Length: 296
Ligand SMILES: [Zn+2]
Image (cartoon, rainbow, N blue to C red; front, side, top):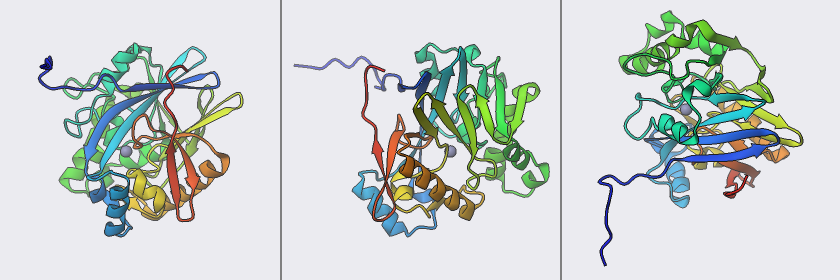
């Protein structure tokens, strides 16, 4: 018996997963991944990190990238936009996965950015033509975050690679939204969705808490990048943390809240669909993926 191969480069069907939180519909979309899990870790013994990743069958580790669509009260919000064309060929799949959901770029009325690192803003605009992918969307960003990365003096004092990824990329990608930018501090950013400050990874890094009826869900942004290591060792950070101690303090605070409240979380760098519970262990914490459900 022979198996007919119809594709020269086999790929997955679209990576889309939906859940309901009360009246709110949340759709997780994979943007792909970037290589280099353990290499980005800081403030953790590397042998211990490797052992944790080995035990979790995660070596070599990659950093997965997710984004989320939230639909409620006749409105549609995208949270983060993936890496677009900025971070290699294994990322930048948000646009095709969004197409598969039937949600068009022009249907999105709000884009919320958890922060403005390239793997979160890279999909906002066409990289070549510079046109907005979400032509009807207001762009909502933390005021502190915007001020930090848009500081021209700061940009002039970094190396070439950091300048391209952390300063020029957001300038290119945010440019077509200049006239519809809403800078915020905290509070409700969309019906049923509250922005919570979670600084450290970046100065204005923020999370989204969804509340509807008796149900809640926390979209915790970049609380972790290498989940198996950073839940076991909450002090472990990554090279991209602007304020490593602040990021670790925030991570502990968020972990405490999520575990104590048994609050389900979704994360930008949790394995797709990134829907998890977090339990406290004798040492650190442990992520427990929520079971897949075919019917909402
Ligand atoms: Zn990220």
